[in-house]
Structures are given as C-alpha cells and as structure tokens.
Image 1 (tube, helix red, strand yellow):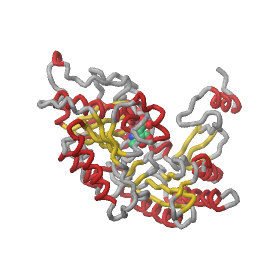
Image 2 (tube, helix red, strand yellow):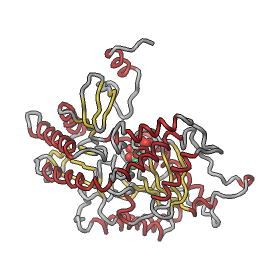
Image 3 (cartoon, protein in one colour):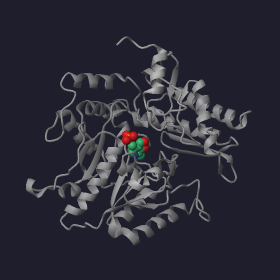
Image 4 (tube, protein in one colour):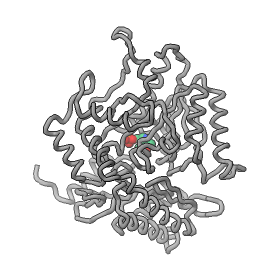
Length: 454
Ligand SMILES: Cc1ncc(COP(=O)(O)O)c(C=O)c1O
C-alpha cells in the first residue's frame, strides 16, 4: 500500500474510524503522529502539550528512554504468551512488585486488559466470593456505588456507573446497583454546609448499608476524586469512613484506582492518603506509564482462598482475557515503577502540585468560574453561567469544548468534561510546561466566557 496522503488520512479518519465518545458527524480530525516528553506532534508538525496525559494515563512522558527500552528488551524474548494456565517471568515480577507496593493485605493480582475489565473482574470476583466462601452468602448479588460514578464502558462497569448522559441509554441491559450520593463538596444538598458534608454523606451511606447490606456484595468507589464525573473531590475522611462502614456491614470494598492510582494524587495509590486497604483494588491507565493496555485487579488473601479447591469442585474464577498479563505491557509497567524510584517522581511532584494550586487560585477569580478543585496533579475548573446560583452553562453551548479549542491554538491539548476543564498532564511535566497549560486554560476561559463570545 503506498503511503497515504494527508488528505486521505483525514478522509479515512472521518469516514472509517469510529472514535469513542465522539459525534462523528462533527468530528474534525486531529492526527497525532509523534511525541517527545510531554509534547505531542501532529502530521503537520504542530506541537501540543499533552494537558490530559493522553486521557489520564501518561506518567513519565512519551518516548521515555527507559520505557522504550523495556519494551524492546521484552520483544527480544516474546511479545505475548497466554496467562490461561501458563506464565511469563516479566508478568510474575510485575505481580510481585505490585503486591509489595500496594496497600497492606492485597496479596494477589489478576491481570486483564484495561480499566473497564479490571472493574469487571472485581465485580465478578466479589460475586463469586460470596457464593464460595466457607460460610456462603449467595443472597449478596447487588452492588452499591456512588452517584455520577464512572468505572468504564463494559456492561458490568456501566451497571455500577451513574453518569446519566453516558449510561441512561443502556439501563435495560444493566444489573441492580444501589446508589449513595457522590460526596460532592461544591454542589451540596440544601441545608448542608461544607463543614457538615462529611457527616451528611457518610450518614446517607450508612442508611443504605443498614437497610440493604444483607444483599450487597460490594461497594465500588473511586477513592478521593470521581474523575469522569467532573473531578468531584470528596470530603477528606470520606474514604476512611467508607472503609469503616463497609467493614461494619460486611460488604466488600472495591477501590477503582484506574484514574487516581499510579502517583496521580501525590502518592502511588490514592488509598494511602487515608490509610485504607480495600478488598479489591483496580488499576489500569498509568499502570504501564500510558504506553500499553493492561489492567490489574488486586485481591486479599481471604478472597483468593474462596476460589481454591480441587478441579472437580469448579471453584476457579471463570473469567479471562486473551491478552491479560501481556508481557510487553508487564515489561513497561515494571519499568514505569522503576522510573518512579529512579527519578523520584513523587518527591519531584510536590512543587508542581503546589504550582498547579497557585494557578487554580488565580483562575478561581474569573467571574464565570464557579469552582476550582485539585487533588495532587488533578486540576479542574468548573465554568458556570452564574456564580452565585451555580447555574451551569447549557450543555449545547459547548463552553468547555470551546475553551479547549482556544487552548489548542496556544499549543495545549485538553479534553473537558462538559463545563469542567481538566488539567491532568503527565507527572513528568516541567514547571514551565505546567505554566503554559494553565495560562492557556485561563486565556481560553476569558475568551469564551468574558470576551465577545461570552
Ligand atoms: C475510574 C475509572 N475506572 C475505569 C475506567 C475505564 O478504563 P478504560 O478506559 O481503560 O477501560 C476509567 C476510564 O476513564 C476510569 O476513569
């Protein structure tokens, strides 16, 4: 096949490639061809700072020499072998490394392909666990999740998800999930103060657990920040409260760290901030530094034990994905963890987190900024039509998208969540690059909410 022209690529990208979460009738191709560090380069040679880490997964930058080399080295041995009944040294080493680093008690790793499958695995493991443990509780078949939750797009993950715009369409296909309110500290229920928020939300959760715990297999939460929900930052102490309540009511806790894990919040795992060990922990995205698809579900020994038995007992976990535990993914995941140590990524993140905070504080003064939120290197700016009433801009006005379009003219690539602008660059971003991203966001906000367009 001869090398296609630029026009052909664009045409095929519009007509043949079906992009996720994208209205293809309006899609304007952006074809990224290369990258260096935190900079992406399109087919015309235009350069963009990767302001959302290629959808929240890049950690140490693109084309990191250590990560590139890890994949090349693994390629010299084997690209893929199955995990169904066999193994590979690289995948085994990664599993060992993960259990050594993870919150205490998580001694076993089930590999899958991505975030959604890591969550599916946790959901199904929880279900099967209750049926097979020494004192079975087969009535535990229902799940508890948070309002606005997003855990991926396969049907189990959608069942525990609660983002109306994405999930309402599929409701007839989903299993039952009870929903506790998202512990949102910006849009508080009537009569609840910021100071009273933690007690209120934990109280709501306890009511649900008290009433339904007998039939709840597990509660699924994204620790500290509900990312796709619009970067809803939880009241401090909420996660710890969830852990205490789920223990008290004999409900498993699934921590979905697909987005918040791998250093994003300033610690390797978000659960560490509140000293929490979940029963199941889901990882993906940054697990491979943002290089290759790989999911991991970590489980406690108690859960693992419930699946042991003779072949004839049929107690194995009947779930698997062809590429689960793929050695190339495992190689780059191991290298990603090594780079965290070699480059002291987390220690060097602290001033960047502080820098992001300063930018957000300034941006918060713009008249159409309702709220700014931050946790680690996750920054969010919520645009509102009216600050006092917190009235959102109508979805169809595409304010967030328009700010990002402006930022792109400044060489910064972003992707909003409705009216919420997301600043989530690779952890390797330099302070100067971070300044450029935040400046582009602020200028975009001014242009789209205060300028002629506003
Ligand atoms: C918290 C959370 N869980 C699960 C997923 C799904 O991950 P993936 O897109 O790799 O399937 C995402 C993706 O954004 C996520 O943010």
